[in-house]
Length: 144
Image (cartoon, rainbow, N blue to C red; front, top):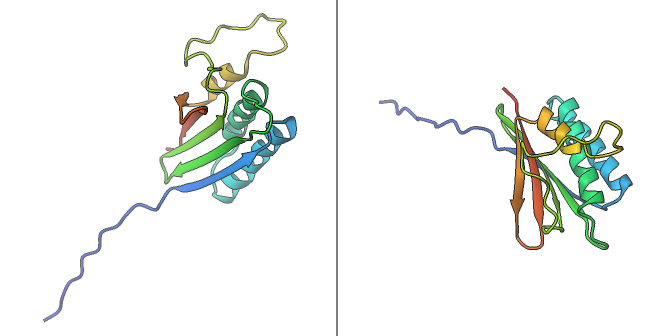
């Protein structure tokens, strides 16, 4: 008599990368470079994700900066379905406009287009609060 063994296939665990970076231009640049390197190593497209990370990290260094507190970059990949980008800073009292509610900047404005770029490239994005004093601006890219 042979015994049949039934195996349940579980989906591969999510890949994740998290790093703390200084809230400086150098930290924002490093966030973009690390994103490109990790996603490239994982065999995932990097261009849209790198642009999103560049904008969110720049916002964390300009609008979310608190002296002595780093910002956090997280990349979470759910196999074959989703890339989630999270940038967390410690200025929860400074919230960006909600998705779809960003005013267009003046044609000659030198800034104010970052979240419009995120909105154009991401499939979804938003803001999550907490734990105090943190806020996380996240963006998701569908991989299918």
